[in-house]
Length: 450
Image (cartoon, rainbow, N blue to C red):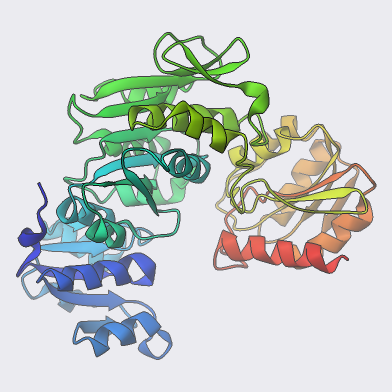
């Protein structure tokens, strides 16, 4: 049942603005909460803070003062990226103040059905596919969450004729209490964000929180080929729906006799799916299972899979220059994503990689570099990646300052029939504020080649 009235007169501290905190503050005030906002960015450069202040909201900028906890607080809404080691967050934990992310607010704001998608890789592709598959179905799909549109903002506008399709990160899921998707999807678990979670075990537990409030009326779609995933969902109370690219399943989604199959019924021939990369069949199967449960027709699923060729920044085809194809996979912020990207091509690959150093090595890339003829690297991890490339026997290894300079160097190394692939295997924050900006710089540099 919709719980908007429960927000009235609640004392809420919003920590961290950006998109999620800004949207959370506005929706909380709209429903009668007493809101105080705190953000590290100085007020002079803080457009969101100024806008909230103009609306009469109390805002504190430039630091995280512990004095913000002196007044009674019912709960905190924390920007997902702020670590729990933050001194203000730690002090709130000691005072037993509930700490949420804005995703939790969705459970207060709407009775619309929610589909939640999480996993280490493939979330954006699966979310996008599913949103398209549900067009024309009994309920209107609204795509939101980590994919770009703030979930609480969308939830406040949604009604029972809508279905929210939400990409959810482990950071966001750490901060839920009553949030419950009708359909939850767990794609895979690999090493990611261990600097934030502390261990792979804690990271996996954060992902599995997606299912914590589900009942037997809900659905848990999971990767039956991932042993860690199958272990994490053992105790869930919802109906389990597996998908597999390796096993023949009588229930759930799989590949069988040249078809995408759901509950033993063929949906579409594999050869008709245009999305590049074998790894994307996991995403296709998960999206198909969720779409079928949510009421999508086979025809709409087929229409999507015969036309959808990928999302921006995820194996995105950019252009062909003198017979050389350029692909933007800037969203590959970990090793596994880059492994899968390289594996998508049979042609010789010139790989552009590098970025934020999280302390890991790149030895796991070596078996996947057999088809890589050159590595152009940049950012903090450049020395480590160059070392890995030498061990893999790559003969052409170049170090440049940034992505923009990497593109013309890669082009000079290429011949007709090669693929130039930006797939960094690292986060962007050492040089770029986001993987989107890094990808846009790549696209711009490719277009300049002409």
